[in-house]
Length: 286
Image (cartoon, one colour):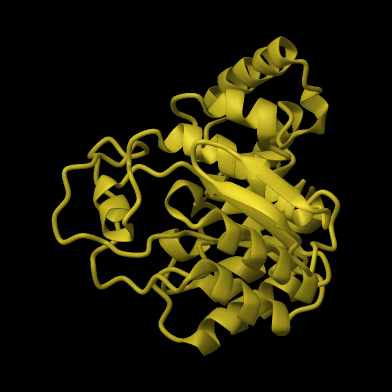
């Protein structure tokens, strides 16, 4: 089992603290750090957050949300083996050509350590502020993924669609990794079909073995339907460090490859202690 921690870019007290925690994670044998993304947090919003019964996210407008790619770039410069993941960036509201360039550049400067976690987004008010239509964001996401992979190929890019018109150019550097891993996040709507068609991994928001078991069955069936090998897909779940190594084994038994621990959300005042505990007690035992 691989372990990640996050969100390392959210609600941080200082850049030094973010870097120190990343270094500590690397020293503890933790595989990866992950980020969250919101460009803005509205004072009021009608959109419902889909992964909380209240429909509200926990962040307030004054929450420090350091840009994910900038945070991971800073961490890349101060680490050597730690993998760097976005969990997740809101692809449907981004400029896909700029994001493709940034993702390739981050993979290049980190020596092939970047994983692009991407989702379609849920906060309509944020899309409005970004000047991007909220409607058809799923179709836009699907198209962007396919177009961005052409940018990463190093070949002449030709992609004409409803959403982009790219012709007769190349973009370098290309990613070190081939392919650059794209982990599609979420568990609602058409996410399983998106993962089956376009994802190198699935970034699940669930920390329940029972729920993940049911969802993985759906993903496996979807892969069969679209002709995708389910075993090609890396599965990432969430774990709150309850139940120790036995709990980790239950996740491994159902096919989870990585567990992300929301250290900074659950234990903001003792994150360093929890990172050390994860490295000392859990990583060696699993």
